Every structure is written in C-alpha cells, then in structure tokens.
Length: 391
Ligand code: NDP
Image (cartoon, rainbow, N blue to C red; front, side, top):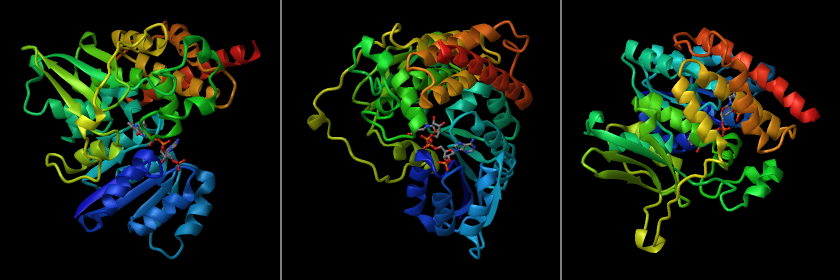
C-alpha cells in the first residue's frame, strides 16, 4: 500500500485528490490530512479514509476537531507547527495543496523525508524556488507539478532534452473579466471576481485568475521548476482552457497538451506517474468543440504580468515579497478595503519600497530569510493599503 498525505485536504485541490483516492481506497494508507477552518470536512474525510492524523492550522478549533474524532482512533492536532510535523511523517506521496505561503514549510518538511511532493502550492516555488529545489535534490526527493500548465509542460517534455527547448507557452483563460471593458474593472466586486468561466477552484486562485496574478505566479513557477530562461516563457490567452501549455523546440515543432479543464487530470497524473491510469475526466470531442481561440495578453490591462517579469529578472527574495504583497492585497480586496485594480498598485509599491533592502536580491537559502521578507512585505503592503483605504 502507498502511504500518502494530503496537505490542504479540505480545499478544492485536496477534495479532488480525495475523490481520486476514494475510487481506489485499498491501494492507499492515508497518513495525514490537514485543513484549517472546515473541521467537519476534515474530520469526516479522516474517518472515512482511516487517516492516522488530522491537523487543523487553526489552534482555536482543536477542541472541535478532537470532539469530531473522539473514539475513531484518528489523532488530532493543531497549529502551523503540527502541520509541518504531520508532513514529516513517513509517506511515499504528499499532496501540497495548502493555499498561500503557508504551504512552503510543510512542503519542505515532506521533501526532507524523501517523499514525492505533488506540488499544487505554486507559492512555494514563487517565494523560495531555489530552496525548494535544493531541498529536493539534497534528499533525493521528487517534485511533480500539479498546476495544470506545469503538469502539461512536464508531460510535453517527457523524453525530450531541455536544452532543445526554444520556448514555453502557458495559456490563460482570461478569468472572470475577460469580456469586460477596461473601464468597468475599477468597479469589479469580490463576487464578480470569484466566478471563473472554466475552472472550479478555491476563491483566492479564482480572483487571482481575474487579475492575472495567478498567471504571473505561474510564470515564476515555470522559471523556478524547469530552469527556463524567463525570456523564453510566454503567456497566451486561450478562452477555452483546453490547451494548458505548449513547448516549442529548436526545430520549430510545438507540443501542445490538450485536455479538459478538470484538475483531476493533473492530480491523477502526479499520483500515478510514471504510469498513466484511467481517470474519471471528460474525453474531449474536438469536432463538437469546433474551434480554439488565442490572443496575446494585454500588458496594460494586466500589470501583474509585467511585475512578475521584473521579479524574475531580480531573483533573490523578490518572489517572496511579490507573493506576500499579493496575498495581503488580496485579503484587503476580499475585505472591501481596496478596489480590484488597486491590488496591482499595492504589489508594485511594495516591491518598490523594499527594493533597497539588503535581502531583496540575496539568494534564497533558508526558510528564515523568506519568512522575514514575507513578514516585512505584508507589513509594508498593509501600510500602503491603509493609505489607499483612507484616500
Ligand atoms: P482552497 O482555498 O480551496 O483550499 C486551501 C486549503 O488550504 C484548504 O484545505 C484550507 O483549509 C487550507 N488552508 C487555508 N489557510 C491555511 C493555513 N494558513 N495553513 C494551513 N492550511 C490552510 O485552495 P485551492 O485548492 O484552490 O488551492 C490550493 C493550492 O493549489 C493553491 O496554492 C493554488 O494556487 C493551487 N492550485 C489550485 C488549483 C485549483 O484548481 N483549485 C489549480 C492549480 C493550482 P480550510 O478550507 O479547512 O480552511
């Protein structure tokens, strides 16, 4: 039996992972399931899957988790440290599906055991790509991408020589506002931004898709994971979300990965790699679909993409600052403190404010410096948000 853990089990990716595991339950021993606020889901899944331990990030909810698990034999724990410890329990395969920078430390912890890390938490690569990759190498652990674009690139590169890659293209649906006129964006509400035309995802990534912050994180993720020169990574708007990425080779050929907009494909690919197994996803009828559309992203409409390119050029801790400022700005947008377009303004101003910091361009080698820059960026972004909220 394969021992597996799911970090962020109660979220969209976590639940899709559990859906696949449930279909073949006798093949897996579930070690740890983690969540935060959704205790009923966490406890219910831990009992049904006979997990060894269930952990909530929220310490105030430990009594509720304990009560829900009483008499079941499933251990209960709480807090960020307990999640890191649960991730270190021996497992063959660990799904990293916590949202945000909170996913970094548990992912590193799993890699240190030599486990295979199925990586949905793109923020880990954005904030600390070199550290994550070095930790995997040091412990002979494998990272398998779960983000659909990166799974697609990974699949297109199978059997290929990375030195023969000329360009990589990641596609973007255009998010909730792709058909909105520019002047309407300033008035976009949280409800407007929380509906994705093609994908059913958690709220934060759905809003990030509307602002293209999600795509900007993915640009950095592509650079860090595949080691591809940023100038060779392109974004292409493709409203149907059926081609997830394309890899162009030096001979002019392009390999495109085509599949339904269903995360169970990328999760299942990482779960069964290096084999392919039957997955419960739609088979595409291209004749019925008829046509696929493509266009270049509008740089003025989506400033997040330009900011990501600046972050890639800078390297060092710029990714940690970028991600933390983005998370803080997103919190403020969700809380109604700033408008949709102000998120990019806050991130840009935070990058500017911290660009002179001695650690901004220094190599990412420890979790400590990443945590420090993350903290500083959230504080700086918070001040900038305060100014805008008053203004
Ligand atoms: P969700 O918001 O649906 O789920 C997030 C998960 O993280 C939940 O289990 C949540 O617990 C938990 N969580 C929230 N805050 C914390 C915290 N501070 N510490 C520990 N756990 C926490 O997110 P998604 O599933 O949409 O996304 C997860 C990750 O996967 C993100 O990095 C996202 O960018 C990436 N991703 C997602 C895709 C998708 O289709 N959804 C596609 C590609 C990548 P609870 O719900 O109990 O509060």
